[in-house]
Amino acid sequence: MWASPTPLLSPWINVYLGVGRAAIGAIFAAGNLAFSTASLLAHALVRRLGMVKASAVSRFASGALLAALPLAPNGATFIALYMLYNAMVGIGGTARSSYISGAAAEGSEATTPAVANIPMRITATPSAALAGYLIEADPALLMPIAAAFTATAGYLLLKLREEDGA
Image 1 (cartoon, rainbow, N blue to C red):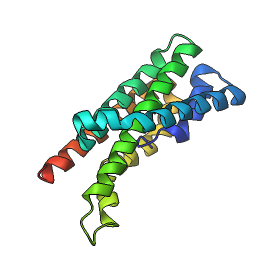
Image 2: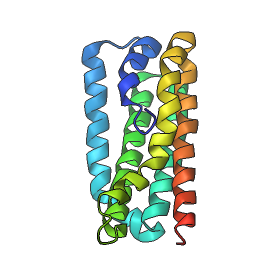
Image 3: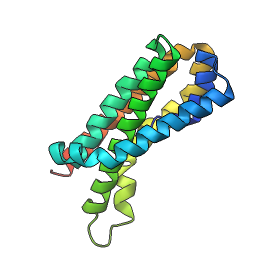
């Protein structure tokens, strides 16, 4: 789930912010716009940091932004943080996809994407199981914990790359 917290983000917004379905749809649309725009601009960060580091930095940044969501004092600030979160996810996804495309050795094109997605899936497995309980126990805990899993995925991505020798 914390590879993408979207599956429980809608009920979280409803429970935590008391926002209705129409407003949730508009918030998601704003997030998608930020994701799309940032994906087009990801090349600048990739050129500066490299593909793997840019992806990891985006995971750390998106984790920090997830943690900040419960701190938003109003709807406008929440939407701005959510759009920034989506922008970071867009940059990281683009960088990760580029890395996957370029890293595959001939004959291993099907394996490379699976290996590159291991950090995200490892952190997604326990977080998906915990999310439902957390949203019932205390919705404010959900996003900071999601942030920790997101940042962990970035760290694991860096460690995986170090093991690769680069």
